[in-house]
Image 1 (spheres, helix red, strand yellow):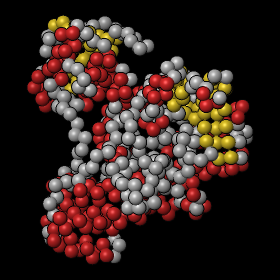
Image 2 (cartoon, rainbow, N blue to C red):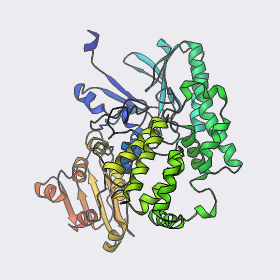
Image 3 (cartoon, helix red, strand yellow):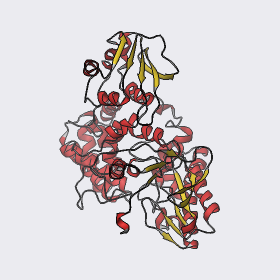
Image 4 (tube, rainbow, N blue to C red):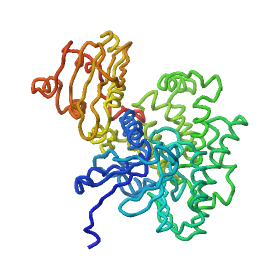
Length: 501
């Protein structure tokens, strides 16, 4: 009987795709489901999954081994799960976003009292944790994980605030530590018992605090970003290293320390040599020339490879292959080197990145990368964000040749969204937009449904078809929108990461 109960509420803990990606399927089964989400979640979903979505999808295939086979020499794990799903990411915009006014909010949902604590800016830009008093149960979202999480995720995302992360775990300890009897998180087994939970939370809290504080201590002593990943290992107390649920199966001390450095000081280490280096291909060619040519480098690399000095072999051979992608002996040895680095890596992301690099050096890009900017996610974007997405695709030189173009885009109320007017300007090669109270003087005014704009973006219809069908109207310059559209360039879904032939 219990399995037949309807789902009446769906709660998103945070703004990452693996925590909302199947939402449309739930809504299709239970159309009356009410959706709750962490504060500002839709904006952050768009920022992380759409505006840089093409680059992130390509990089994600590396971090999570999406194209590797499931065998001893391929993907073993994706750290948070055994691998990526192959389905399309969907997203249902929440009916209600929590913690908009305060860090704490209490709601009763389907008769169950729940206390929500805003933790945005920690593991995700929009995130919350939840306490259920009647069950003495703490849902930590992804603020805790059986291992160390990412301060910087290798697929690419905004750097996370390790200090706030540590402090928000401390908030949980102090708010719920006396009463909690079970802790459950998004990607880990539950923790049972009050003392065990407090020990677990404090160790997690202190681990992120150590990454933050010790990285900055080293940086303030002049340790640079390339060196800090190795240097931080000498600062971690042995009891933390020996605790399995702070180990680097997902995040690592190495790239997390670099993330903290980058958050505060950026990518530049103030060494003048690193201020304005040559572009990567030109730099690689000069390195190969300075080092006596490709044959000389490969000879030395073979000797170092036999000694297990894989880190520098990878650095040197990458220059050779970048300078000459057709150098087969260098490609083969670099692939073997990445393979060995992958086999030695404890962090799942590191292993998958090395092995995917080896695979692409040998046989090229394989299908299987996820697509984060899916039709369903696009459909939940507001009009201003849709035009922000278009702005990312504008070829600025081509746009500048067109001169200034202005356009009012009026949409009618639909699906709980208000009618609005967006004023769009192509100016100096850049596409701007802003919501206005009423249409401004412009070259043209387009009246259209937001869903039809999404269909245009997805190539499922054209503005010409919509105008001919009477589903959209335009006054003024009938070519204004098509002129803007002519400047948009498609993204390359298979751009080069390791040098391809």
